[in-house]
Amino acid sequence: MTMTKLQYLLRGGKELSCGELCARALDSVARSLLEDGPQRLKVTLTSADPPRLSVVPLSRERLALISLWDERDPVGAAARWTPRLAALAGRLRLEGYHVEEALPRAYARDWPDGAQTPGVGLLTLLRRRPGLSDMEFFRRWHDGHSPLALRVHPLWCYVRNAVARPVVDGTPPLCGIVEEQFRTPADLLDPVRLFGGPLRMIPNMARIGLDVRGFLDLGTLENYLVSEHWLRS
Image 1 (cartoon, helix red, strand yellow):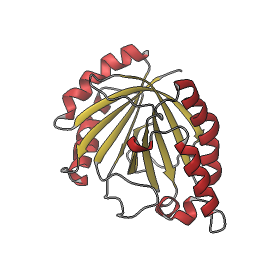
Image 2 (cartoon, one colour):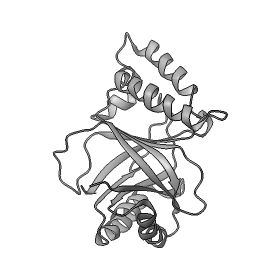
Image 3 (cartoon, one colour):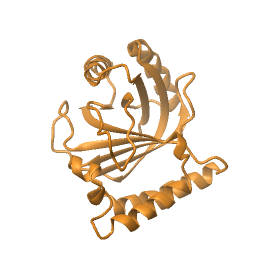
Image 4 (tube, one colour):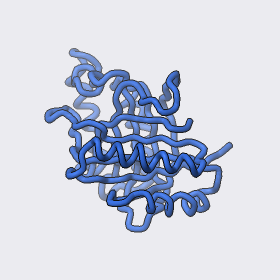
């Protein structure tokens, strides 16, 4: 069955604690959504403060990503879920997108719904480099960067969401939402492990850096250290 995937961002700024965000997004919003019967439901959120120093610049903002799947067409799915999310968001700022999902690398799940996904996640919000066409952006991202990232980084799961259109009024433009999962925190936070080992780290960092500068607007790039929670799979 072909399903529509919608992704909603709940932004809590820096004033909200990670515990407060978890209570709101995971225990309140997502549990309420479960009662409305989405086909699948996943919550990805900043459940702990990131380290002060990291080779990947990590935002200290509090953010939750609600991913849900619906059997309706995109217009019908958005009409069903956007008002529900707006009612549940409270003082969290709501943004939402219809996305087209690709899974260049998928893990084999052996943990139950409701349990946190093992390891650690990196959530990245992408915008294309000014002056680059949409066609060239997606070509560089899908055919160039994705294969390179899979060769260089110790990725356990890589979910690539290309934004089709916003589904919440006032949602800022966004080109892509990338969900990366690593088996251990060190695989992400240790630059030697993240970039392929001591002998390959420096050249791989240069390759990745040159590549992303070619198609991303680095000034608007958002990276979040996150945990992932499947509530219905």
